Length: 163
Image (cartoon, rainbow, N blue to C red; front, side):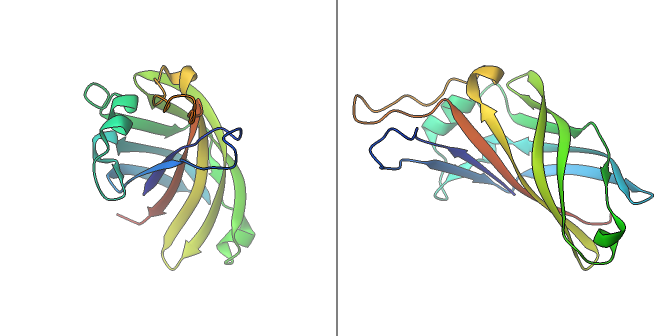
């Protein structure tokens, strides 16, 4: 599950016009070996992002989903699952991956929290996204009253199950 948050900048007189798009259309796999996640790739279908349960044309236009259907994230450094984690403790770590949006790929380093959920592994985190770095046209503002920030956040919950 991914939530994609587009925020208003802090100078909007305390008013909020955050836009949160959500999708469960995520496919991928992770490789687990010797207490480490050694590889992972996930593809997020951006055409399935909805806002309040409905497609949002301005959101889709900003992400240019007519041309760029997917966001792809690929792990570039192993995630070490500590002995404490194996014993049931939560794990806080930083993940390094390559993120591709709109055919532009950049390295992304972001915090994650991991925990065991019976046989599953749950990973929760967020990736800050500066629109200009990926060539994303931010949503247009609403005149002098509102302006939208030039960044967003991709929040995620991955539930990794043995296949």
